[in-house]
Length: 550
Image (cartoon, one colour):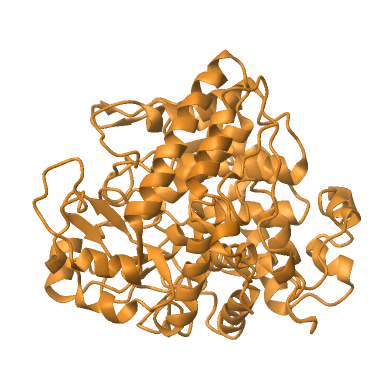
């Protein structure tokens, strides 16, 4: 059932509320952050009963575990764990990485059958996030804390690519622990892009680190970690890279190809939606954690100003629905004035034919990229889901994204969730854009491949918008395939029928851990997804004034 919508006149003015709430952050001596409910109460009446305060306390207490390898949710609810979830936990624990006896993360993939490991035996920052959330949900925060501290320590390393020195705030893309059994020593080797394919530094790693630090703080209630001088400095160093002044005329971040999850040449250079959405979410997370001392206040002022500009820019220039598509189709070009409508000089003839058939009358999404004379009309799942979770998308835009998913289920989900982007690029365009990349052939890998790990973001977005039935439908597809297909990393094909790289557990099982009600016969439960949604205070139901200042 769709979440009931408020009449337009009764909703808050998004721009006014954003300006009002964020501006007040500069006038008070101390920030007090209050989390708003991220879904409508009426829609939640359709869900099963969530956690009680006692349940949450149990989840946060390591001592409450009854069985070593059994998720807490199943102990609480007294039914046998779903076989797939039990297998996912087993694979997750086998993938844990230890440094001097302490767990510091999980490797990207665990596969005994393959001799070609490439860099799958490393701990990737972005890949560890769903693992970290699973550990937090299961009342095991120590590995997350160790990971946050270890990557923070790596941030302080000098970073060079050939003879060029990277910025001090750059976080590693990944790291590997080398064990010397003779000397009985452990050594960490980090990759900041100097070993990556294409030699591109990870722009998203710093954002994921800030977001995960916020999730850890909310999950455990432990404020001491985020308030340490080291973490405060780490946050400021990351923000310094993003908030520095330069030649930019837009509040978005200019990036190279391959700097995020889409880590190969795929034509996402410029201002990709994934980076902008993560940037927005990281800014709001940092705003809630920075101390209101002299150094912190300086960054708070910069964050507030950037959030105003970034939210306006994204909601107006990246958003595409049926009405906006028709407006672009009628754009005039070569407008030279402050009153120009076609501010980026987008050529109407550059609109691909598929967009007109793809766009339903009800629905919309944030396009992949907007820059001078260029608009990438492709759909990117990660960026749109994060836009919902971070409240970068307005309530109406969030619902429109959900509408689009339902209307275009066959294209965006198919037989295996979730298309990383749509549509694929092929033929001559593929040769030009990817440089004839044999891994990114049409409907494969990052070129329209289906990635089950993205389901955790879709599930959380569905919970926030009050549309759990969409997530349930996607989970049913995964439940019937992943185990049978030996847990592929991703699926090929227009409908996602061909599993690739069998035996890899790159977060595939973790998507199921967001749904404690699997197999209990009680309909939609999603207790874990609801709990995790509460870890991000940067969400609200009817206005973007999601950070309240008292």
